[in-house]
Image 1 (spheres, rainbow, N blue to C red):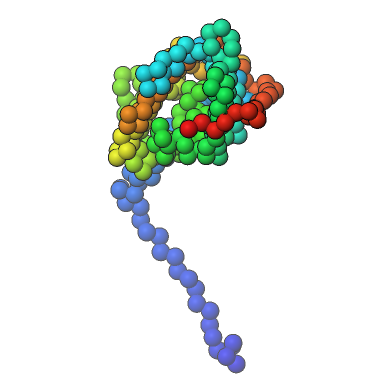
Image 2 (cartoon, rainbow, N blue to C red):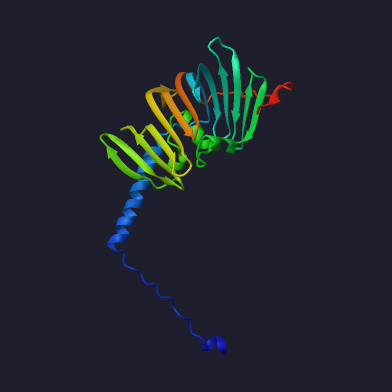
Amino acid sequence: MALVACKSKKLVVVNRPTTAVDSAAINKENSIRARLAAIQSKQVSFNTFSGKAKTKLDINGNSNDVTLNIRVARDQKIWISVTAIIGIEVARAQITPDSIIVVNRLQSVYLKKPFSYVYTYASRQITFKTLQALLVGNAIPEVLNSKPDFDAEGNNTVLSGTLQDLVYKLLLGPDMKVTQTNLSNQFGGKSLQVANNVFIQADNRVMPSQIDISSTAGDKKIRLNLRYTQAEFDKQLDYPFSIPKSYEPAN
C-alpha cells in the first residue's frame, strides 16, 4: 500500500546561462591548450639519444675543454662519459630519476647520491625529465604541463609564469623550437639559463647543435658550452657503468 501511495518525483535540471565572463575564461583555456599542443608537437620525440659534444666545462672558475659522449634512455637513464683532449676518459656519470653516480678516474674516487643532490646546484622543481629535455633542446615538461602566459616578441613567442617558487621564461622561435630557457628561484638564489643555437636535422628530428647552460646556486657556478658533432636517435645503446673496488667515496 505504501508503494502504491508514493508517487515518483521528477528531477528538474536548471540550466545556468553562460555569462560573458564564463565564455571568455573557456575561450582562454582552450586557446592555451591549443597553443601548448602546437608547441608539444614540435618537441623532439625519441626512445634513445646518443650525442658527442665538444664541451667547455667550467665549475666554479675551473675551466676545461673536454668531450662528452651522452646517451639517454628516455625517462630512465642519462649516461655520460667525459674524455680529455687526448682521448683519455677522466670521468663517467649515470643519472636516473632516483640517483646520481659519478666516477672520477683521475682521483680514483666516486660520488653516489640520490637525485636530490641536483638541488645543491638547481631548484627543487628540476626533475630528471628537465635534464633530459635540455640535452636535446626541448621545452621543459613542467612548463608544458602548466598554464603559462603567452606574449610576443617580434616573430618569437614568450612563455612565462611560476611553478611554486620557480619563475620561468621560455623564448620560442617562429618554428616553435625553444631558443632560450630562463629559470630562477624566488627565495633560494638559484638560477638556470639555457641558450639553444644553430639548429640541425638528425634522423628526421630538428635539434640545436649548440647548447649553452649556466647554473648558479649561491657561490656554486657551473657552465657548459656543448657543441654537438654527432647526434643519433633511436639506436640500440649500451650504458656500461661500474665502480672499481679500489675506488673510495669522494668527500
